[in-house]
Length: 263
Image 1 (cartoon, rainbow, N blue to C red):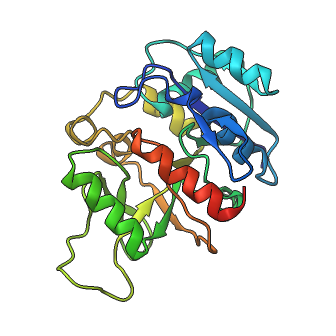
Image 2: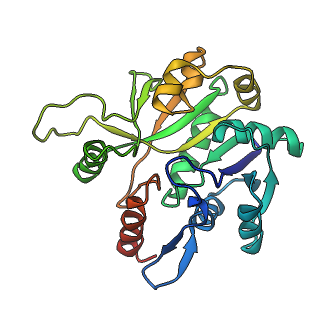
């Protein structure tokens, strides 16, 4: 199964303009851009044929090519990362059995998250789309709730049925949990990585944005709104911190995680 990773990145982010080029300092003091760290995360994944950055911005292209990445230029009209992946696939003529969207704001994504996703798609040829989820620890739940209290749109949570098919994704902390510690914590953090069959990507381009996607700002809801199941693949942190860069406050969170991991 030929697998290609695409890293969609745009400069004109609504919540954090220019964030792909934001510098992140590691424990040894070296500063690398968000897009470079995301590319390095993608390059660490085993069993992948190709990795490309997909962008519509020359500033990102120049920066990515400077650290050795392959870049596919896409349309400025792509409204989200999934659309950008579909556009990159169409423009480049790439042939792949599986497309992985590792979004350019997820530099802390461990390689085994993506490898588990690829393995799940290989084990179920009928699956059209899949995405990883990770059970939250108490600190992650508090980070999610802190973002909501402060009016920030931060991480995403996921709920799924007994067969691991997604029921819903939300910027709210779901499911509702009463005050107090529950063991195990029933909240799952959605990891911003997707795997698609090429035909699922092609179908996505023909669907209009639905009410749920528009309100939540979550591109994966377009699949659910149009009756295409998405498989949730539970992954384990193995002591690693996972967080995405959605807002300026996340820079310090990610730098703290890099320091903790000695990276």
